[in-house]
Image: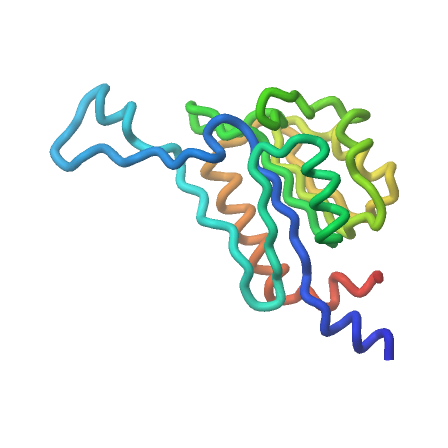
Length: 177
């Protein structure tokens, strides 16, 4: 009976977006504009909105304080974390900065992950191996990370593919409860 209950449970994703561009939507250049002014007004690569769909329940935090992150974990009890680095102006993804707090130190970050632990953590930060190792050392079985720097374009495509798989196949992936 408990297996049937765990199979019917939705996959719960806690997404953490960070940096000064995470909570602002830049506007497109007005039609007919070109040159440096249009380039300045052009948005960075657009990340599609994260939203609940199918068996995937999404909760999003933007530039949370450590206390807000801990509280969200306690209330939501996610089985999947999506942690996005800063969206930089040059179309790259940067390190973890929540508001004014640099969260990229592996030991400081993993102290914020509390039980019950998620099954999967996706770290969308450049050169994330040390951070991933620290997260995995907490007992989290699946940690996905980038070894090098990467563009918003690559990150967006990978995230969409990953979430498509999770939305479709979440029940066999998350039966560890």
